[in-house]
Image 1 (tube, rainbow, N blue to C red):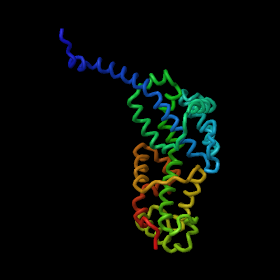
Image 2 (image 1 turned 90 degrees about the vertical axis):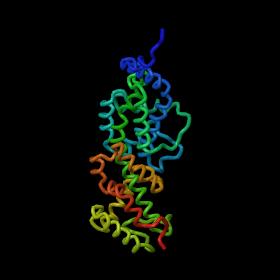
Image 3 (image 1 turned 60 degrees about the vertical axis):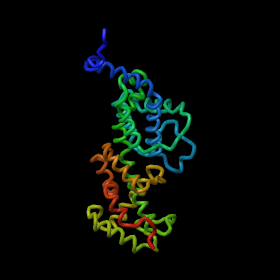
Length: 288
């Protein structure tokens, strides 16, 4: 008796069942990758909110501690978030305990990627695995996977916007000065380049009038971004212009820069939205 393979695979019920079986097998095989991605998400939390002076080789027992310490008032929001996704632990204490357990067996540490990298990877993998099966096997990993979008939007998107804006503004400062290592602020510019810097800001505001009201407003807003970036942790982030633009575009595509995030950091959002204008207004070398 001949076996009609084509007829079998044209049967929708069979192909649906086969797809479910394959997803469960993929989920089982991908547990190590899922655990690694979830750890990356927690690394991003810690890297975002731990001040540079507090880093080194020490890592807090739970990355949520760094978040709560750096962001007063976030404790209640975290409590509500954990209750919204019970698989995370049902409370802040449960969430923290699960975070500690997840990182307990980590073999090595690595510099975490940006939240946009992790969220993109989670979304791609989420399409390939069977979430109910993951929930049965590893409920906490399941909780992180299904809540990742909301977690990034609520706790990481704003800080990421500020830091990407700071990278752009710092790149402009480096190009505007013969001595990038010399410390100066936009409101108190390098005396050797004060006129050039004011001319640069004038050029920017002529091209993008909505960016700031005038030169002093731009300078004060840019310095505010720098202060916010310091408060939110490490500020040694560096990307070349193409990579910076790619990351800003990816953040927007992932929905990270929502209307509420834009409203919270309006100047930072305008900066990253006009990177081409900012970076094209000053050559990629110190001015003579």
